[in-house]
Amino acid sequence: MPVIPRSSYYDKHYKQSAALIRARRPYLVKNVLTGAAIFTFTIGVYAFTIRAVSQDEFEDVKVPDAPVQPPHTPNVSPNRSAGSTSIGA
Image 1 (cartoon, rainbow, N blue to C red):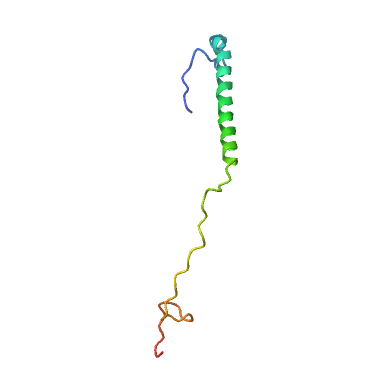
Image 2: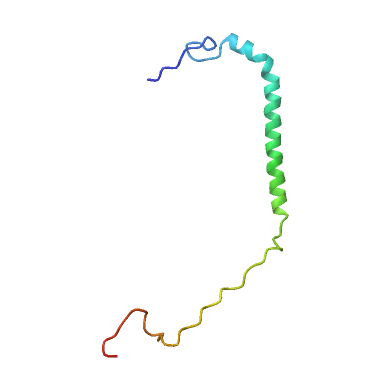
């Protein structure tokens, strides 16, 4: 069983004590505003990125033609597979 070090800010059931609540109270509004600002910035960057990418039609991208087939070698019969040998032919 892992041993968690005891803190004076938590009781024996690891609930916040009155001292911890009192110590965090001055920072509550600032922390909420900072979290809201970070969340708003993140959503703004995401929305901007999605909007910017969705506007691109990719008309300037050149699509290559179908690949050119190599010419067939004249001495190979299309009925035989490469590497097969027939004795007496």
